[in-house]
Length: 449
Image (cartoon, rainbow, N blue to C red; front, top):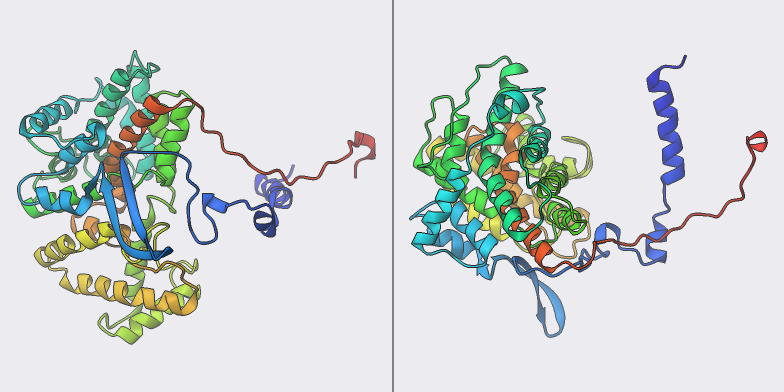
């Protein structure tokens, strides 16, 4: 009998032969790959009042790249951050804004915090029976499994009324930090043979504070650490509606599926390295750079390393400088711009100024190196992932939790989009594919080769 590896290799070759399409066919039939044309413009697939991205403006009738801006319910995200950063934690305030369309007053915000805190309780024995069972280094898979299992505890799982879906979404927003941290601790204990820490969340703490408190053995964190994490959560909370996981949320919602299945689908989308896993690749790339370039202040040496990456001669051989460029933004990613100042503060507090200087140097040189090698139609700049991984490393957050923390933030945006889709949908989202197959004549078994 043949070995499994042998027949899988043969079957995989059959798949490659049967499924490979001529790239020229996309242009011939005017099919936009990835729902984007050759200039990177996305196909408009819906309407939303939740957020918007500005990356271009019209100048004398010409579409011209501009500094990026991100809007949440009509508010510039930078203004939102500047409004709360020195006064209070912002995650809960901005989650309220995304869900309900208005900034809360003090009483509304306090009531909303109380609701989230009241929901930070898992079903009896859920931690033992679900999270600690079959732990995995892939915390995104653990998180997805936990979300799907929560459906079994919800007697109104399939009720898609707005009241019920809102209840479910508020519960998931509250529980994501717990599911993420507990999932990591289970993995770290059972697979890495480390001590187990299961700290209960505090009703007195914000989402960012609770996450750090539950993660750390001694429950301790600084005010600056919590505030920088809080800002990271706000900046990752929502992004224009056209990203892969949010589109997934709306597509699955349009089919009439339940909230837990919808969010599990969104999580499965986010975990992909082309979406939520990008900050991990940035950290790994920078570590490789630090290993292979002895003088981090030598611009020529750093430039040469970046050229090697683009030429597939360094790092992972993919030819990508991770954290540079974005599918939508052109001259700048506003999230990276506002985040960088807080990253600098944290680096100073952690004694990581040398690392921050290297990140800044790569941010400066990478666009130059990329533009020398490739035709750039809209500019290249650092995106938020370029700095977020560095921040998580300074916060002593394990690499396995980087993408799950993205999910802790984005669940608020997914929830807002699910509710908006439910209120406005009248059809299932069903995109079209152009078939290019040949018609064939049926051949009896005895006459097949």
